[in-house]
Every structure is written in C-alpha cells, then in structure tokens.
Image 1 (cartoon, rainbow, N blue to C red):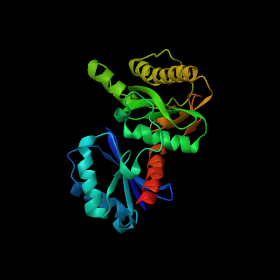
Image 2: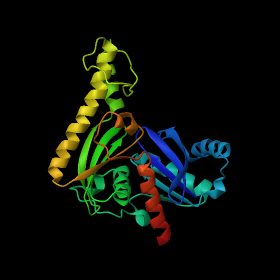
Image 3: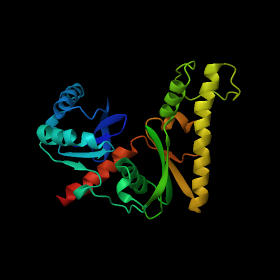
Image 4: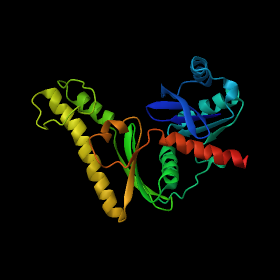
Length: 261
C-alpha cells in the first residue's frame, strides 16, 4: 500500500492508495513545526479507526511546497514505516514530463504532479485549474510538457483580505448559489457573496478564454482541489473535475520510482 502525502500551504493531505486508487484520505492543518512523532500519533489513531495497519505501508511519496516540513515528513517515513520517503521531482521520483519554463526549479511540485496526472488521463492540450490557497491555472501541451500558467489569489484568501481590510464587513461562508439569483445585491451579505463568488467565476472564465486563445488549439480544462466542485454547477468551462488529481499524479510517480529501485 502507498502512503501519498501532499503538503500544501494550508493543509496536508495523507492518502492511503492501492493500485492507483484512493482508499481513504485525511487532512491536517500545515504546521512546519510538527514533528514526526506528532504525525505518527495522529496517523496511528486514524489508521486504527479505519482498520489499517502501519505495516501495510510499502511506499511513501511526498509532494511539498513547504520546504520546512520536509525533514519531519522524511523522518516519519523512515522511523514509523521503515521506508525512505520519495520526494516528487527528485531521484527515482523525478519528473516524467518536460518543464518548459524560464525557471524550471521554481515550479511548485504540486503543479508538476497535476500536469503528469492530467496528461495521463486526458489526451491533447490541457488547462489544469487547482483550487488551493492560491488558484493556479497550468498549461500542458499535447506532448505532456508543462508550458507555464497563472497564479491568482485563492477565493478564501481573497475573502479574508476583504474582511480584514474592511472592519464593518461580516464574515460570510463561500458557497455556490442554490438557484440563479440576481447579481444586484439587496443587502451587505448578498453583495459580498455576489462579489466573491460570481466575481471569481468571471475571473476563471476570462482567464481560461485568454489561455485557449493563446494556445491556439482545442484545449480541455481539468479542475482539481477541494473547491473545484463549488464552481462546477455554475460554469461551463470544466471538461473534467478530478478532486484527487494530485494524489493520482503521486501514485504514478511512486509506481515509476518503485520499478527503478
């Protein structure tokens, strides 16, 4: 069994995978100070609750955009699972696609992993949208090469900035409208919801249209990240929503790494 770990700026996702499929997943707030022993205590309880055994883990692969969390994750793999942690983009888990940008080393591991998984699942030119702390739009060409993309503030980050900068604005939940509603808000909360939700939809649609025009060939759009389903019902730009795209990409890299070792 594979333990895939996706370390993001806001959360860490731990997923148990078998034959490329997600068996279960758990989410923990990212804290680079958290030790390997703390991870182990937390995971041991969750493994037990769902009937899994630490001894079932044969491989550990990690994608991280938080360098400070790297050491303790590596110690976790070695100390508690008795296997080395493969880090996406390095060694046996090196990239299987070309990173065709000005500074390849600056590309976040999660974005490269998403590109690998997207190219494996869908043929042709692709735009991959990942909804996280930041919302990223990445272009992958028909040959699987990563060509570049866009980084925009995530919707939660945008809402937090608005609330923190305006003392009288209330905190609202980000949710998809249950029905088609007017975009003329009749109260403060409605106006905020319209601005945040429909404003974000408009940004996504506008950026995708510009990317497709620049690509110059038909391109399919794959959405991932926990908030992807929030927008799926109210825009037609997504051809596929795959919440676990990053995990599937990690499983592909782990399979390749396992064959090399």
